[in-house]
Length: 415
Image (cartoon, rainbow, N blue to C red; front, side):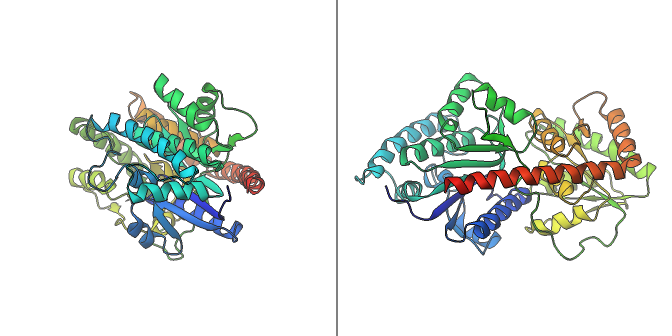
């Protein structure tokens, strides 16, 4: 089967999450520069949206839209209703059957043009490149199953697959472990963005060896705005948001955040700048300010430019965050960070991210009874040893860059 000079790129982006969009842009730029003889095709749920976000690159529909109608009528991707789960699985089996028809240039049966086009892209591509992210886990089920389906389809078409900078695992049950083995065993190379959890979960399903190793998050070296966004250099950035919380949990969460904020304000002259990584983050930030207004706390207005939010973090003294990518932006700019997680999912992602830069102890689980005491201890420790912390971050980044270079050399060999 003759392959075209196409590299297909897919990831968890396409939803105006600035961290994911930063990963996307950094990956597209890297691949375009490294492989100028190849057409880089970005697979997205909304082509028009991604053209606006990344106008310099070529975009096609991702499998979540082409196969499962995300963003379209009869959406079976989001698992919004219980019946969509078995339909998703049955549709996956039908797509697998049709992939053999496409492989041997036979007419497909009962597939829409988007699905057929996607299968043709997979068949003809020289490489399928999973851009980094936390979407291939048992916690994001439809994304995980979709990703494993793609891996299997690529195996049918003899299209090599690599995965860059993933948080992967949290299988949750035996069925998901079996799905992971079914999909991942044919992947040529998997690099993860945490030092422990993801590799352990891969090892649990028998995947280990020299082609499974740690690199940095794909957004680590993304660009930042050249212009300052905050007219001050004496502030700390803070990100938090609601994720799967009941109204009661939201209220408790806001109160815990306020206790931490008050400690910072009462013990330093730093102001607080609240930052949103998605539009939905602004709900929690605005709720906080409505409940606890303070002249020393401001919200940086959300916009769709990840370069600007990275500059806000770059110019801050410290970053406190529930989400993963503010940590990555902070590490990329040598800004110390403390994770404020509120679920096992974020503890998993954030501790893993911090550990890459020797910062794993700077994590607070807000569900622990002693969260406040732990935050105070970590804040004081970070403040007193700031220069040592930054030195460790810089040293770790240098090592991770070497691992990324090794990954790209292996990709060169595949192509």
